Image (cartoon, rainbow, N blue to C red):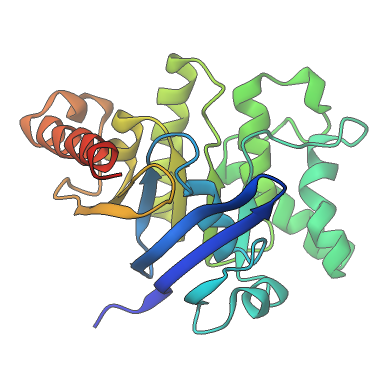
Length: 259
């Protein structure tokens, strides 16, 4: 039986603002299995990032339940159950790449020897060996994002949450990083939650695609991908890939119609 890593039931979140309540999420039900690569796709403002932040314990739901590794999100955060990669790399410009990756390890109290070993390991995972003494401004946008991913991997959490990490990059760099991310996922067997606006990216990367509607954010479709785990980029020309992409697009249209 597949182990459930993240489980949400009847999850809702309403923000109170000066202009009245904003219903960001409504009655979200979803189970994510250990080792799944799950993409969340939907229009801007549909609650994709809000749901990711609920998993991370960075937002507090106003209804329903959510567990991460059988714990509350707050307990999971304290247990350092996940790494989080934001839309921007968020690297400190005065720290080297190695220094940025080491930061969470320093905060957690790892020994200097352990810090060095872990930094070396994740630099290899993201193909940045030899760049540890460079500063962020000396790296391209794609390399900065890989350093951000390395920082999230440094303390070896089982779950990796990624909020549209490649959205600002050009298509060629994005394709390359998609390939690298799939290779990294295969090597580490992490459970990955990935927010994107790109249908091809969602279909290419995921074992499960979660399609969300405009606010209030609801799940309109959950697609279990039949694609093989090893996926060259040219799989995007295959009939299966195109059929899944059409289903995602239909789910996005249906979400707009039903609101």
